[in-house]
Length: 406
Image (cartoon, one colour):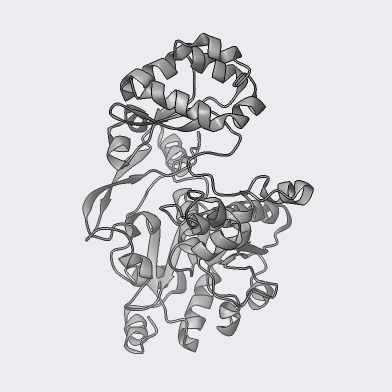
């Protein structure tokens, strides 16, 4: 391969957003996860953290060793800046001048208070794209309220329908409201970059936690508007969608989704009960929904006589969507995860080799990668970034540090 061809390939392999710079001002999950997604796709993400303390995400996660930071802060360079003082605001403003995208998830009005609101920034940097994530959005009567992901899940309709019918609302084991908002924020940035390529103009992306959750609520609102129907908690099933549930085997739990007429006939054949495929109680979508509990009990009684491997083989042979209910060790051992490199090993500064989810989605020509581990310390790249982009020398950086600005 020629040197020029190798150089072209290396450029391609840095990711789809290799020519995009992002300044991330956010903390915790919504803003930083948006930054992670953009960084995984190749963007140069410069994360601004408060001096000394840094992003609280550095201390989040379960277990004695806090490794969640290693995922959400990968592919980022860390600089420190005190945004509560004019000197820090001026420094970050100079940094934003070099950027294509600004990501933030502070309470609405905070950037404006710091002199970094979109009206000011877009007047000076009309190409800038500003992704703002907040609890209730930048407008409306609730906009100035504090909001976390769990509150967005509650207001957006998610919490009420999750859990068992005879218990209070439950939650997922991850911060789904935050990550949904970050994902919509990232989608907005990508669309805005497309518009900017055509017009040269940046814009503001306003992603609210509660509206991000609302977007995935399927028919919840129109069902009420048309029929007065209020969805209720239904445990491990969706009411009227059957069979689609987790069933018990001799050695564990197994998910089967045969909620389509043709799939149900194939499942009946797999159970060696082909007559059930045409049984009027189960033959149609509506009939299976009306007899959902009875049908689930029938399938569960069958799976209890078999191991997971036996059920898996039968489901595969009959082309029925099904699979084990995985935990982390199951994922690490699975040959499909391994073949697609869905989980990768990253050499981190604090913990050495660490397994984590790979970048996603997959690109055929410009694949996302983990090019650098999460910064181990706050402001780790101060000299590199402030020197490279702003031309500050060691003496100037030392003075800013002595003043508590960085």
